[in-house]
Image (cartoon, rainbow, N blue to C red):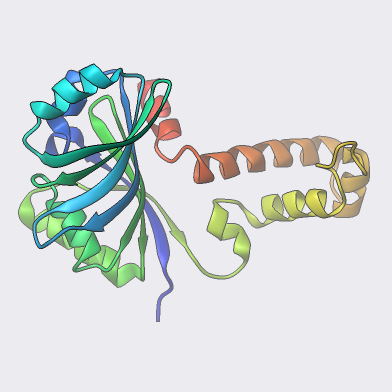
Length: 225
């Protein structure tokens, strides 16, 4: 039996809910925190919207036929958390939630694309999604697949050496204030050079932050460059 896997993929904005809002607010970031099914033909997400004032958001949503039942939950400066229902352009999302029994853990929309991270129970469930989009003429471009098996490193987007370096540094007090050990001592313990450890910690920290906090933002910035 195959193990669960975390899949990263992209969907063009015109094939996804909030297309009109995303088009009318081109410099705004949409980040979906949670998506659940709402009836047979709708999905209910919590959506963070950044870099836009509430008046502009309200106007954009009023002109977007893909949503209804918009509710503002909280605001912090230029960040606003909304609950809403997506009622059109949600075929791929509903397929993921129902037929594939997947969990959409994060979605990030900006500049004409949506970047999703989806937890599938196994590879067969992912195949159901890819077959569905092919049959329906839709798009879900898979950019990365990570198996959820073996060492815990893979759970967080890390290689095993990166995971070992971070966990050893934490246990030995490298991240304490003041530090209880230095990089040179950690490098000796791991049997690598000081420079190799420095690079490994830096790459591991970047990968961990991207995996935990900046789901689609990094990919979006890379696509711009």
